[in-house]
Image (cartoon, rainbow, N blue to C red; front, side):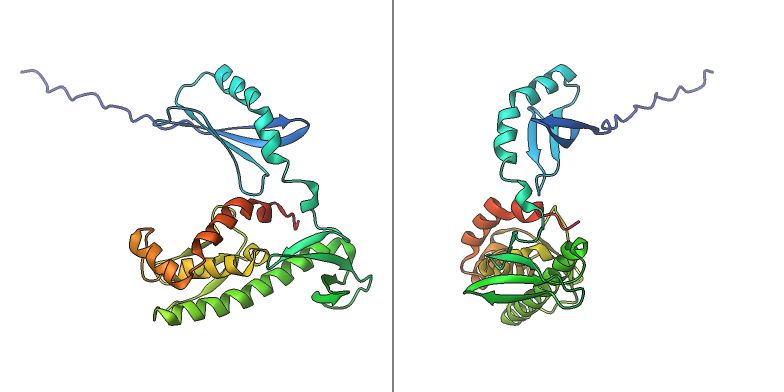
Length: 253
């Protein structure tokens, strides 16, 4: 008798680890992640939210020379797209920052003591910041988080009451992949940067996540409920698509 021969195991091909490199775009060094994908049929290049990094998806096994040629051909496109992420996004005394869609002038008081607050000077809004100059960005971020919390707490309670949907917690984060989320336990999370957007956009984000308390999906019933809560939904979605990355680009570090 001969021993039974077992069939050789078929090894499962694991996707290759993403390649990371630094791309020079007209003197601007950009982190680039290149990921091979089994189902990809073409090369796609995306600027990450905030304009601080690039992500590229390529078909599996694509030659490095083709990747490099694609990047060379798209230098002009990258320059055009990255132009909107300028150094104006850096927090500085005398600069501007949007709060609820209104450009507010940043003014450092020169005093080591005091609060960060919005005041009106000659009919224009000014964000008055005290403390050490090197701490201004951090103090402004803290102020924005507090303002975002106040707005979203109020809006979530309003929308949740309208559809009689209980929720658990509300958390402020600084996420770049999404503006908000809703867990199956009813925990709501929001990016505090949304407070820099116009009020209708803040309202839409609150309505969007509250609608998930009833519909944990993005099907027709979800969008119908979201629009019922927020009639200006489409306008707000368009604003986020066009300007959302600029809010992520503002550097509070």
